[in-house]
Image 1 (cartoon, rainbow, N blue to C red):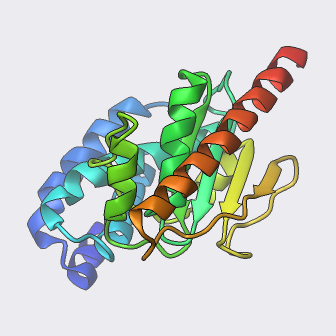
Image 2: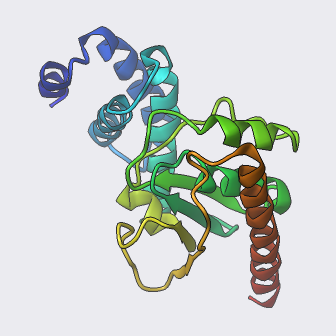
Length: 219
């Protein structure tokens, strides 16, 4: 299967790297997933990111991160990994602005007590420059973040799914909490407007943390 992907997607230059990534993740998920499953996720993750990647040199590193996160989500959704903390997924269209800001802010506000992911229904090649700037003003560095495609495994693993202008692209599963945050898309906006969007997201994130903390206390 890997050979087919090599030919159709032009992966020849990185095949050895992808196999090494697969080997490392196979060790990490030994007893949970077969090596063939891990390899499939690695190659699929590479192909998905390669469609929009602006700098191909970063692809192996982002592929390992993305594949690992997907495998963790899959293992959690199947009950193979226990998670004692809530898992939240932010989804917007490009995963270049709103969802990235929300994820970064929730990571800070939750102090590691919530697992946070973000994704895009139609991810772009890189984060919005103004978004990176206004988050840096708060001391949050998004320069190493990258847009990620929305996948079924991360939705299944999430306890809370928050959408931001991506319509009906996110699959609906019973037993999950869904919210839709109506927020202006920062793409093409002035930096002052992006600051306002950031601050609105920050307030919503604080409310979300308070809600999830209360639920955890009651459960």
